[in-house]
Length: 166
Image 1 (cartoon, rainbow, N blue to C red):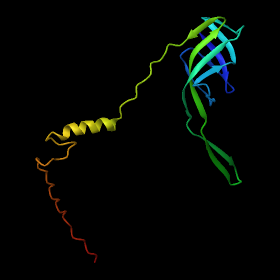
Image 2: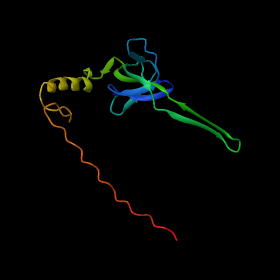
Image 3: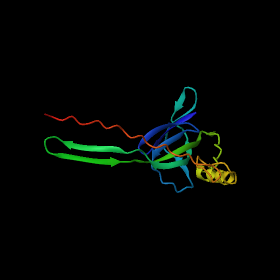
Image 4: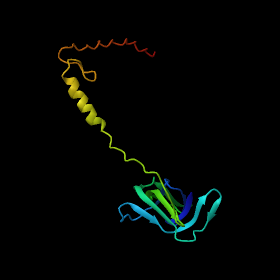
């Protein structure tokens, strides 16, 4: 099951559960996007056609961001003309949740929400507080009960006498 939609002047082949990057969309509907311009729909293997009735493709916004920088370099030879500009295109990543046409509806399986990870710095602080009560050293630093190693003195390099010119 897939559909071909038009968004931002480009065409995309989408299936339920796909994540696509489209041109920046205005998100005024709680992160839900409805693609009304459906060009073709396929209900099964080898079947494709224009939707006879209103077809509907629904998605939810996953991420908004900007793509990597593209350098635009203008140059005219023999005229000392050079111009360098950068451009970053804004995009919206959309996860397709449902494709509906002719009374049929195909939905994507729901993705479980990810729990925020505990930052490493916070975890390290908890670990240091536990180990401070012990007499052992933390991260290689010596404590009061342990002796510090002394550095060995450097050896002097031998100097050779400079040769005299006659």
